[in-house]
Image 1 (tube, helix red, strand yellow):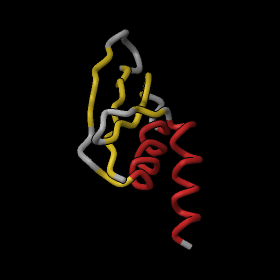
Image 2 (cartoon, one colour):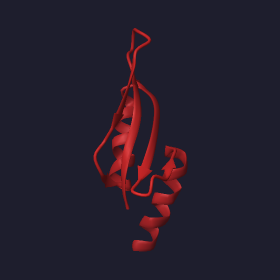
Image 3 (cartoon, helix red, strand yellow):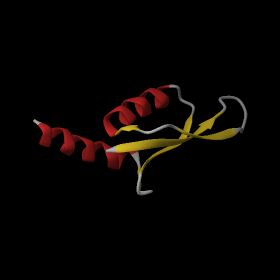
Image 4 (tube, helix red, strand yellow):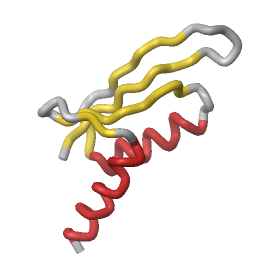
Length: 73
Protein backbone atom coordinates (compact mmCIF):
# COMPACT_ATOMS: atom_id res chain seq x y z
CA UNK A 1 0.00 0.00 0.00
CA UNK A 2 1.24 3.48 -0.87
CA UNK A 3 0.77 6.35 1.57
CA UNK A 4 1.81 9.96 2.01
CA UNK A 5 3.10 11.49 5.21
CA UNK A 6 1.45 14.73 6.29
CA UNK A 7 3.20 16.55 9.09
CA UNK A 8 3.33 19.94 10.74
CA UNK A 9 6.84 21.32 11.22
CA UNK A 10 7.36 23.45 14.32
CA UNK A 11 10.20 25.93 14.60
CA UNK A 12 12.37 25.23 17.67
CA UNK A 13 12.49 28.82 18.98
CA UNK A 14 9.42 30.56 17.59
CA UNK A 15 5.75 29.72 17.38
CA UNK A 16 5.91 29.15 13.64
CA UNK A 17 4.50 26.01 12.01
CA UNK A 18 4.41 24.85 8.39
CA UNK A 19 2.48 21.92 6.85
CA UNK A 20 4.32 19.43 4.62
CA UNK A 21 3.16 16.46 2.54
CA UNK A 22 5.50 13.79 1.19
CA UNK A 23 5.25 11.93 -2.07
CA UNK A 24 3.84 8.41 -2.26
CA UNK A 25 5.84 5.64 -0.56
CA UNK A 26 5.24 2.24 0.99
CA UNK A 27 3.86 2.18 4.52
CA UNK A 28 7.06 0.52 5.74
CA UNK A 29 9.18 3.30 4.27
CA UNK A 30 6.78 5.95 5.58
CA UNK A 31 7.10 4.61 9.13
CA UNK A 32 10.89 4.73 8.86
CA UNK A 33 10.80 8.32 7.55
CA UNK A 34 8.35 9.28 10.31
CA UNK A 35 10.73 7.92 12.95
CA UNK A 36 13.54 9.98 11.45
CA UNK A 37 11.40 13.14 11.31
CA UNK A 38 10.31 12.70 14.93
CA UNK A 39 13.92 12.38 16.08
CA UNK A 40 14.48 15.98 14.96
CA UNK A 41 12.05 17.11 17.66
CA UNK A 42 10.37 19.46 15.21
CA UNK A 43 7.21 17.52 14.37
CA UNK A 44 4.05 19.01 15.85
CA UNK A 45 1.76 16.39 14.30
CA UNK A 46 2.15 13.55 11.82
CA UNK A 47 -0.39 11.40 9.96
CA UNK A 48 -0.41 8.95 7.06
CA UNK A 49 -2.92 9.19 4.17
CA UNK A 50 -3.64 6.53 1.56
CA UNK A 51 -4.98 6.97 -1.99
CA UNK A 52 -8.56 6.75 -0.70
CA UNK A 53 -8.01 9.64 1.70
CA UNK A 54 -8.07 7.45 4.81
CA UNK A 55 -5.74 8.80 7.52
CA UNK A 56 -3.95 7.04 10.37
CA UNK A 57 -1.79 8.09 13.25
CA UNK A 58 1.61 6.44 13.56
CA UNK A 59 0.28 4.37 16.47
CA UNK A 60 -2.54 2.96 14.33
CA UNK A 61 -0.40 2.42 11.22
CA UNK A 62 2.40 0.51 12.97
CA UNK A 63 0.36 -2.61 13.94
CA UNK A 64 -1.28 -2.58 10.49
CA UNK A 65 2.16 -2.62 8.87
CA UNK A 66 3.29 -5.51 11.10
CA UNK A 67 0.27 -7.59 10.03
CA UNK A 68 1.04 -6.96 6.35
CA UNK A 69 4.69 -7.94 6.83
CA UNK A 70 3.70 -11.09 8.77
CA UNK A 71 1.41 -12.20 5.92
CA UNK A 72 4.28 -11.99 3.42
CA UNK A 73 6.44 -14.47 5.40
